[in-house]
Every structure is written in structure tokens, then in C-alpha cells.
Image (tube, rainbow, N blue to C red; front, side, top):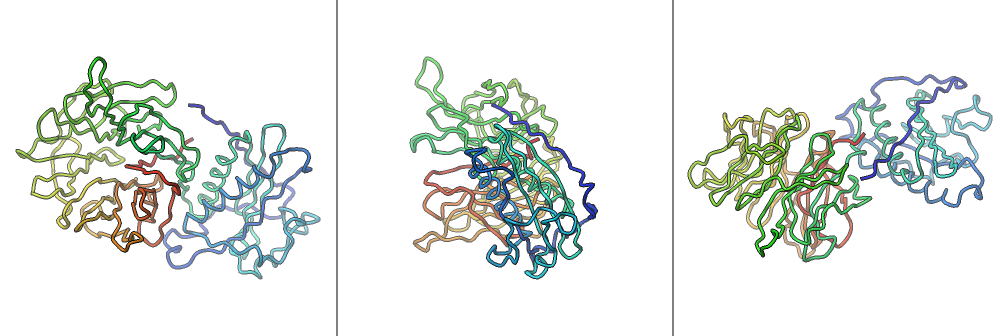
Length: 459
């Protein structure tokens, strides 16, 4: 898989009288009650229209990507461009009087803007340069000034990088806009499910498998360079298909069959040190959770019943100390946690018909899961000890019946949960803030998606 390299250079704006300041401008909890107003004029193009035939598409792609990123962040509400008091196509990126055609902060404070992003770009050959300035309007202060360079094909990645930098500058924490998702989908035809890789916002989908079978339950390695998944692949010389686990190296494209024991080999979860995979294996018996090395060698059996019990869907905490899983050992499938060696089992959920698919937040303080009540599933988030449960979803289908919402996965910054929902008739991907106050649809097509897994940010 081709890796795009982008040259990112921090500019020094010696000619400006404003000082770039480091500090927290938005407290992480305040966006719940009041969003900051952000003014973001269209990107200016530094060149003649004849100098590049693709400047309009490149500029639109970067502008739309940044706008979507910052809107999804839940920190900002954008000032409508019709309210702007300046003709932004005729004013510079820097303020007057330092720049002869510079803008005036008064024009932006008058429309209530808390922050102003002024940016422009140029294209030379196949390289695009994005020059950005982010200001705190009330203090007439430059918060972030940065220039980004890279191939025009990486325009979206440049935009995501800038959005991350804006959040880091204003909140002290980086966003999740350079992250990606692996997911099972029927995009290639309704008869099959294959594994796909895409940006967090569903752009740039890339089919990773072509087994012409059912491929499910993908999982990321800690370094983001490998994906484990389960596929019902036909074995050579036979008509037999088994739920085998494979490991795909995204850099080399090499694919390895790592667990092909009779029965279920599914639910991969990598240890944070990148040395082991936890998975569910049945071997003709009730499924239990095992620890396995990359070459398929079983290192240990982590759960052991009780007799007749199902122990599935291991989810490893980001520090590797705990494993959350689903088990019906008490009758109905519920969410449990245990130490990484299988000791210290604790039941966390006690309500509902069927609780499944646990997912840890990056800081290990919360667990998301899908809980069934009556005939549908919803997404819940609770503290890692089972307290403080919050319901994130309650959507209905067009016919008024409750939709099913399943397969939660935390974002790398811990502020969002991704999941699937069939509320439109197709299993589409959505995200919600962890407190459930905002929800957005990520995919918008006629395909079905299953068990998305969110990566860490990609370097």
C-alpha cells in the first residue's frame, strides 16, 4: 500500500506584529453547552487560473474536508459566509496594518466570531502548498500559523493534518482526523463480504480482500501496519469452508493464515506490545478466548468455561492490562472484564437480553458495548467498572420501528464512538460523541457495513 509523505513545515511570521501563543483556548467540557463561533472564508488561490487546471477541485477538497472535520469535532459552529462584512477575496491572510490589504479584526468581532481561519494555497506542478493562519479574534492573536506541502493527490490528508493541528492548538489535544477504519462490507456485491480500508470519514475506500466469501471482524495491529480478520475461505482441494483467521501486512501485501483450527477462529484483538493476538476459538466445543502468537502458536487459554459457557469477543485495553469480553456464563450474554491472564473476572452488565461487542476507550476509563432490549440493539457507554451507563442511540426506522445499532469502536482521541445502524434500511456507519449529545452519519450509500474498527492516527 502506497504511503503518502507530506512535508510539513512550521512558518515563522517575522513580519507580523502578532505573536503566536501557546495556551488552551477551549476547555474540553465547554463545547457541550456552548460552541465557539468560527469564521472560515473560502481558500484563496495564489496563482492565475491558467497556471493549474485542477486548482478549483484541489481547493474545494481541502476546504470541504477542513469544514467537515472541524464541524464534526463538536467544538465549533461556523459563521455563515453571507454574514461576512469583508470581501475575503480582496483581503489578505494577515491583518492590517502589517499587510497592506490585510483584514481588520473588528470586521470579525462584529459578526461574533471567536476564531478566524484564513488560508490560501498554491499549486506548482503536482505539489500543493497550503498556508494557514488561525486567530483568536477577541485578543487579535495568532494562535497557529503553519504551512503544509505535499502532492496534490494528498490534498485531503493535508486538510486532515491542519484540522488536527487546529484542535491541538485550541484544546491541547489532537483530533482524530488522520485515523482510518477497517470494516467488513458488501460493497463488492451483496453475496459476499470483504474487508475494506477507508479514511475515518469514509473517503478513499480500498478493498483489502477478494476471497469472494464472507470476511468479517477486522482488527488493527498497534502500529497500524497489519489487519487480522476472519474469512470463510475454501480450503485447497476441498469444498469445505471454515471460519479461519488471516493476517494481512498492509505494507508488503503479504497474507498469512494464522489460525485454522476446526470451528471458530474469530474476534481478533491485538496486545498493545504487538506480539500477540487474543481470539475466540471453538475447536468443536463451546468457544473460549485464547492468546496466540503471530505464527499461530497458542500461548494460553484465557477463559475456561464454566462448562457450556460461551466466552467471545475479547477487547484488550490500550495498556494491555485488562480484557473485556461477552459471556453467557450467567445465562444471558453479558459484558465482563478480566485481567490479561484470565484472573479477576468481573461482571459489568446485568440488564437486557444480549450484551456484546465491548470496546475500550483509549484511556481505559470507559467501555462501549451493544445491548439488546426486546428486538433491537443500542449502543451504550459505561465506566470501566460498570457504573455511569449512558445510552448513545435510540433511532427509529422510517416505519417507526426501533433500529439496531451495533459494533461500537472508540476514536483514537476517545471523544467519539463509531458504530453501525440499520435505521435507513442498510447497515450504515455513524459516530456519536461519548456523551451522546451529537450524532453524525459517516457512510451515505446503499451498501452494508459490519464491525468497523477505528485506528490510531496515521503518521
